[in-house]
Image (cartoon, rainbow, N blue to C red; front, side, top):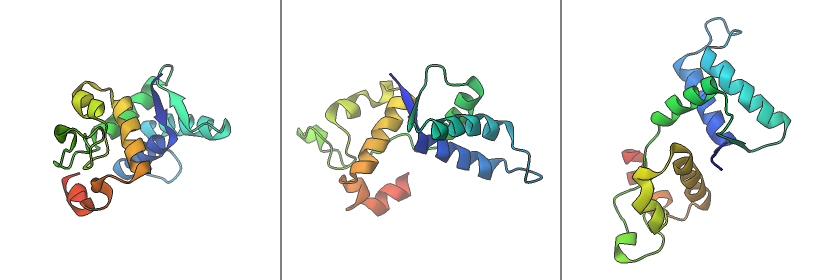
Length: 136
């Protein structure tokens, strides 16, 4: 089941807060209202992920626009899976994730990004962090 993590909802909310701030400090733009409703329900129900299936269409559209503004791939052009490693030392993705990246849904890609960011042991997060931030 594909899902969206609450951290991505928060990031999308912050993206829209910067892109389309409230003009009067009270009324929220449509994208923020849609994402805010989902976020509030997740907090109320103590959930850290929400299923994509049944996700409100306006909130999903706002999330997708945020997603389109993020780096597509964690690749830093140092791929050790091509040398036979099961997990890339450069980006932290598995061989299968590297091979199927272009076929993966945005939700699967964000789940991979979350996993490798939490692990934080790929070169992208330490040895070549400066290079990764410049390319992202």
